[in-house]
Each structure stands twice: as structure tokens, then as C-alpha cells.
Length: 244
Image (cartoon, rainbow, N blue to C red; front, side, top):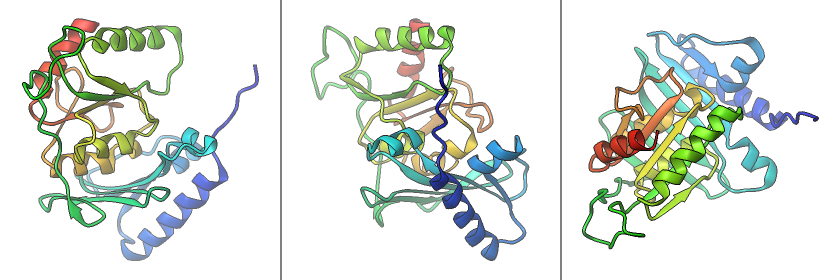
């Protein structure tokens, strides 16, 4: 079976353009990009100020003309994301955040949703107790064990949520939590820190929480992330553990 490489020339050209611009303004900073890492191996994240860039998150969407694609640019200091910019040029939506300064969509302040798993605002579906819009990314691995575990979790959670969406962009999934379009996002096995460095800041500054799906603290190098409003976190962790 022929393997199809969906990394496009657009990815590479965008990353070069972004890095060239940033280096002019921040010559002493470090840089990590998805395309640079793919070409030259793993780039280690240090405590130094580091710009982490995904020039085209949602490459498969881009190839197929599905409009959920974005540029993701994050700045970390001491391995902690402090600046986040996510731009979807097709929908002309620019999400921005700076640590301690709030989160914005096209310059307007944004906040996450206020739904909880046991919210009385809407009736439960199918006899379940949870009511929320839930976004999951299947991750990058396609081995049988990973796929079986993913589909088992989805099957279990389907009875407890209003709907599940898979839109194909980790960065935009996080932004969806930040602006209240969805109540919960999680992904296991995403590509690397460039997928989340910007979105983490945007979610936090919008009043959301970032954590490992197991319930432990989020680790930007671990390729595991969950984001939600604070009301959802503990119930989701419990539900995910029950679905294992």
C-alpha cells in the first residue's frame, strides 16, 4: 500500500516565513517548528524563551479543502507557554492571548463555556447525566491497539454527552474551548508541542483549565492534553477512567 505524505510545500514555506520574521525581532530566542523538527530530528525544549510554531495545523483538512486549518505560534519561557496566537485564515479568525492579559478573538475578549457535566440547563440525552459538546482528536497513531482504545472510549462517552466532534486541528480544538464553542477537548498522541503551545495560553486566559487526561498536571512534552471549563474537569476524568 502506497504511503501518502500530506506534508506540503505550504507548511515549509509558512514556517520559514514565520521564523524569519521572529528572528528579526527576537534574535536571542530559540525556535522549534514542526517542519524543522521533521527534517532534522527532535528539538529539545529548554528554559530559554522559545517560539514554537506549527505553520499549518490541520494539514489533512487543508489538503481536502476542509476549512479548519490554522497557523499556531506560541512562546514558552522556562517551558511554560506565555504567549499564544492561532489564526485561521479561511474563516479570518485570530485567537490571541498573553499570560495574565486575557484571551481574545479578533480583538474581542472571550471566555469558555459555563456548562457542567451535571448541568440542569438541558435535559440529559439517552438517560445519561452529562450534557456538553465534546471534541476529541484520534491522535496520529493508527496501530490496532491505539484505535481500539480510542473507539472504546468514544463508545462509552457517547452515552454521556450531547455530541462528539472531530475537526482535525488540535490548536483550533483548544480555541473552541476558549471561546465556548465546545465544553471539552482532549487528545492523546498529537504531533508535538507545536500543536498546543499557543492554545494552552488561550484556554487558560479564557478561564479554562489544561490538564493531562489522566488527571495529572499537563506536560507540554508528553503528547497528552485535555482542556475544559473548570466545572467539567473532575467528572470527565472519572468518566474517562471508567471507559478504559
